[in-house]
Length: 391
View 1: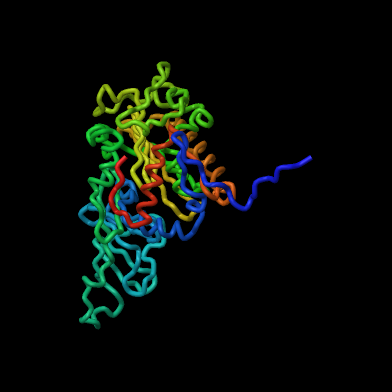
View 2 (view 1 turned 60 degrees about the vertical axis):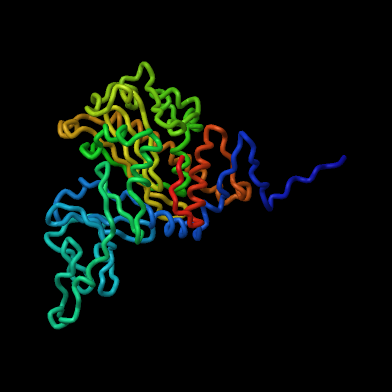
């Protein structure tokens, strides 16, 4: 009797590229510290990054520190009520100016090391013995400012010396997905109030989370509650597969809630064609926007390591809904379960990125082919291609 030798386990064959199957990124793209460093430098430190919800900084002197790529960015509200952003580094000896994630100061920001003191616009206003150093230019010693834009009620920052067009790379993502910016503007997200926030510490690479959000091939398998409300997701095609398409609610569902029961009435700005529909938008590199008739859900990702990503998820409602103390738990619970199910799947996938079986990567089926555009976008960014990739 003859036996056929087993294939060598030393290396996996390259992923087959056929009309039905497209190759993914190779496994090391999700584990290699050097690739993650390049992603920090060439993606997160060069593009607009959604840092904080503007309303989280309610009063002058409120601040929050945010990890953007390899940098700590300090965002604060100045005396006139405007948001400002700076690198969180004292200009004296490089100490971290604010070590807490959030807080509030009365008038100034003071370094805890040598007491160099800056006003809320970043200007150096005081330091021990500064009067004895008349040649010191306080303007030159100011905190390093970071460009900041507000959109959808959030503060977006960019560490690039020459930031890319916000209109093209951020607002343009909504146009690519919905067909026009007005379709998103009608939700008036900047005027909504925070009804709930959940933070998830996910043991997975940030790209796995984006890939998961962009497809619904998995929805019938792991999202029973979601497919009850959005039955077309059970067929495997995500809403993002089609420009302008919103997944329709099930006939028996009266709201986007965990049991399909009624929510809080339609947001006043949206059109009839958007009612009883769910829309999902990916704003590269780290934001998901989910639109339903009575609320908006915003995910912000903070990549911390090749195998760790912190995700902050906000549920936003009309201010009167939040002020009334209405019970939003059923709508929060629906997407919280979706998040938990998705992140569990990503954490189940991350260990296999090290496997020799995934050394050459995997494949995308036809309903996932649009993820290939994302992979090409990442590849182009790391290669130095600065132009935004149009879907």
